[in-house]
Length: 100
Image (cartoon, rainbow, N blue to C red):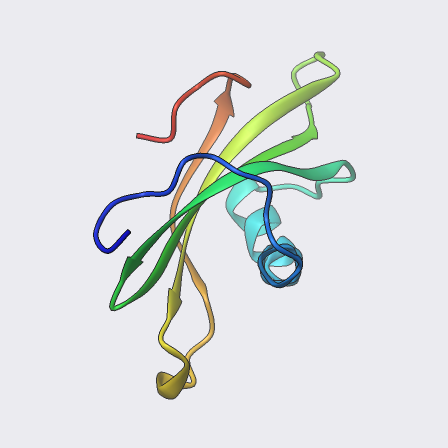
C-alpha cells in the first residue's frame, strides 16, 4: 500500500539478504558484535524507495538470553544506485514492542 506500512511479516529472501548485508552497520549502531542475529519480522512502506522496520533478536549483554532491536532501513529506488541505509535504531525493546 503506497504510504502505509505493511503488517509485520516474515522477510522475503531478498529482504533477508539486504538485512544480513547490513549486519556490520547494525553492529556499529549497537556498539558491539552480535553473535546471535535473527530477523523476527519486518514491515515495509513504499515511499520514494522503501522503508523497512526490522525486528531483530540478538544476544544480550544485560544478563538476559536475548534482546530485541528495531532497525529502520531505507532502501532507495534502484536507479539511484545508492545502498540501503539505517535511518533509525532502537535497542532493548521487547518482542511485543510495536515499531511506531
